Length: 100
Image (cartoon, rainbow, N blue to C red; front, side):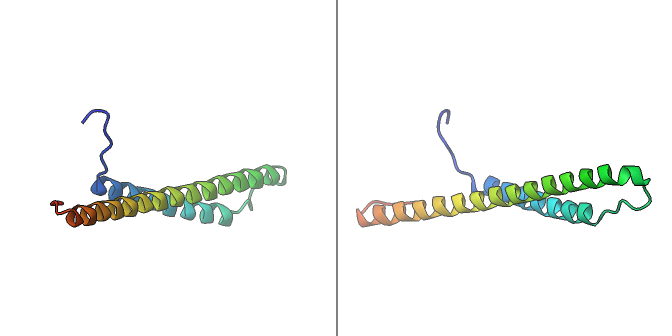
């Protein structure tokens, strides 16, 4: 329906999986960047190279945390919708109505 919000648990599950995968990939990238070496570079380039690695490591870490937060929030939203639906069904039954 136009203008109405519809919660699709299957879609939410897919989004949780995608955010969880992204968080995992960012954690892996963070580790790889932290483990990267500047050995073999000319001494004049090592400082800039280390700064570059540190900045990207920090960015990957922040992206990992953000992706984990998004996945957690989607999970929480799903639980809230299920709980709300169960409460509505319980109240409808208490009124003698039928709930689906």
